[in-house]
Image 1 (tube, rainbow, N blue to C red):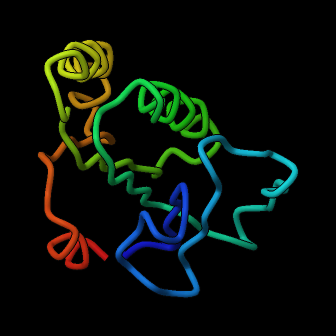
Image 2 (image 1 turned 180 degrees about the horizontal axis):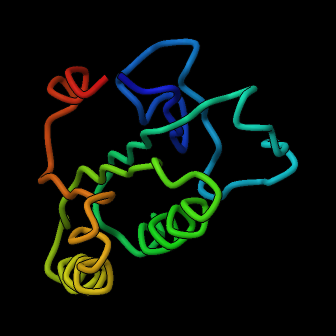
Image 3 (image 1 turned 45 degrees about the vertical axis):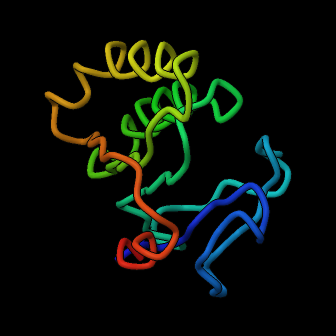
Length: 122
């Protein structure tokens, strides 16, 4: 269903597979060299994690928007919810900012799921 899963640490992802890539809290572009679409045809991205400013979900969404200029079939599913009232403000602001992308059909939001259920997304 997915070509790869990015996670901050191996322990933070319940899925154990060769397509799970721990990247820390930020992405180091030197670890992800540019590849031609024919070398690695990705069409669906998935983010599973709580809504927290440290997760930079807004940056993920805006990055996918830019990638879609060259890969118009690229989609993003975001699974997660805020874990407290302060983070709820962040979740609301991200979803408000991204509403146009949801309406365009390439971005979907899903509520939090348990670690056991996350295996079914894979």
